[in-house]
Image 1: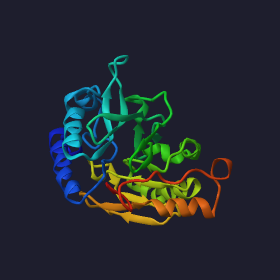
Image 2 (image 1 turned 180 degrees about the vertical axis):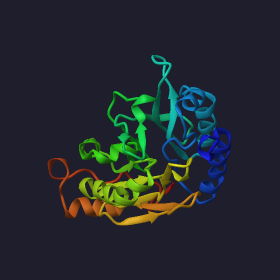
Image 3 (image 1 turned 30 degrees about the vertical axis):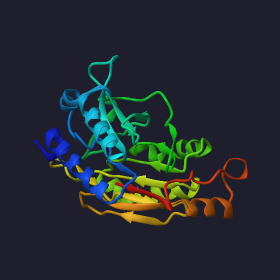
Image 4 (image 1 turned 180 degrees about the horizontal axis):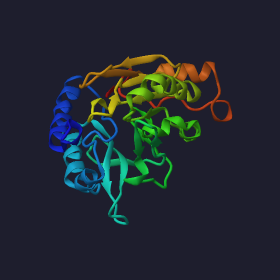
Length: 274
């Protein structure tokens, strides 16, 4: 068993990060894609739960207790319609512990190379609904997952629906991450004049798969505010409302010549932990 397949260990690590984020004053703590289990079909089916299951319940309780939003970057969600595949599902929990938004990944990563074969569609059911935008006290948050990053129209739609901070929890492979990760994140931020926050899986998972890591936050001008490298832990970033307002005002390229600025959060800005 690789570390990515050890669900209990990964859950324990994820829960240990919550007090760190609380001590840092985070308004929102975001986890990567499939942060609790990274492995094969049988394992995905074994750990999959419905959204009213005990795992989501643990994070809902923590969010309500600490009055901090938590983004479960993605988990394996059990399907009522299929028994051999699951959903790759992102869950945003609000400060009261209620589920504020759910997104089931629509763009699935299917890759066949001489040295590597990844067919996400064999084990994951594609979502049927577009990524949501939800209003929060730190701004309008848009959700996406990993491979979505390669489809600019998806992010243009999020911007058109008011997104100001867009999350991209991911598990990029090391080769694709090295070549494209920061370029794509910066492009989506620049094109849509929004903050892009991308918590990312890191580490070696079996003999042939290594996650790229490099959790990043990019501002609306395309500046990299955070690159966490290959470390596991909590990195804190202040999201400044004035930056987004200024970029959108000085270079109006949103719907109808512009879009509203970042919703007013608590104090000068909002703090995101990833």
